Image (cartoon, rainbow, N blue to C red):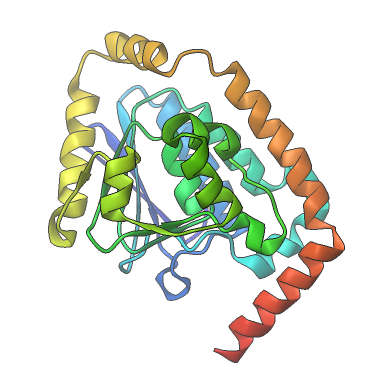
Length: 250
């Protein structure tokens, strides 16, 4: 585990809080490992009926910590980030998210694997993989067009356009937009309600709603391979260098 992911249990809900607020909860390999462990713990613990993902300090997640991500690039498709998206896509219990502030890259794509998502009015979503010479991940090349349609998917994944909480609600990514001061309590209450319902019926209902996950898992693997190739491309090297230079200048 890492101090940048806090784990709490209450009312049958295991809450995983991204706690690297000084970096807007940008994800490191260690944080991914902690999230994978937390999801596995929630899955295996019979007292836990649902899991909740949230962020600290007014942000959900700024996506990957680029410096840390580059350091793990040699791992290819075995990178912690790719193992995390497989873990969240295959998680077998209800999953809720509370999103405030930025949700960039995987900070957005992981939400497609949640059952209920609540966002604060100021939440901002973006999947700018293309701007780093990378490709979609977490199955988003499948989930985004399936959920939003091809035209909107092209805007979000090919142009890398951002969208706000109101648009996320209209598109069906979030269930409700909730005042920031009530966001976490709302998500916790919904997660507790899910956890309190009959477990076998809940699991069966969730499987029926989600359908065959085989194509999704296959797409995640396909994306991971393409992503790993893109990571070592000259285009990505130039994009990463520009990003790091810009960050250092701030």
